[in-house]
Image (cartoon, rainbow over all chains, first blue to last red; front, top):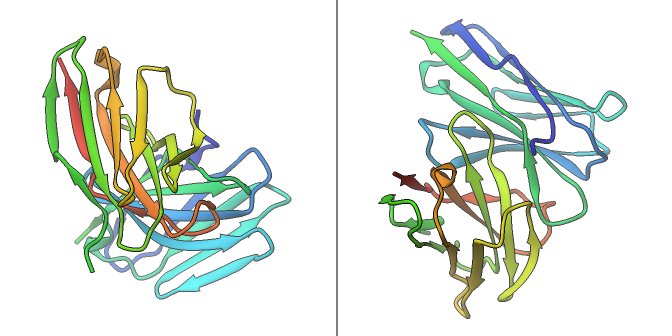
Length: 110
Length: 114
């Protein structure tokens, strides 16, 4: 079963605009990770935020984590057509597996 | 350095048949995990292997099995295929068994069951 839901399920924006995706989860976590998937192929790791962190940046990516609300957000600034992909959040507890959300499909129009 | 590799890329099987999918982790990575991704959904955890031992299993029937070899490569086997087994099967590797590390995914094997 999925850990939680991502919101929105689909997002269409103009190139240059910012894209924000939200992720909710249900259980206690060790960390939360965001992955990108192009055209139904392999996932690419974007960023990992640990449960004791509130915000993390990587290039044009900004991730926030609110463990009290069991939610996270991914912000992509100054989007490009190449950012078009599906984005998944995944939570990890102290064990071995990732539990993925249902994903947000992002379309960046040129 | 080569990333995670998977073979075959695509596979078409008939209901009731058996399938074997293969994965080679990144050099130096000892842990391999398998995920199933049905169209339109996020990946779901099937197995994790570390040092040739099963360290975790998801909520999948016994038709699904896996093993890891001394070179840390892995095979996922699915018996008595059902239409619902049609999915993208992803392999991921990490240096150690913990999920506190980022996972490196292969390109996946697209399995179609007819």
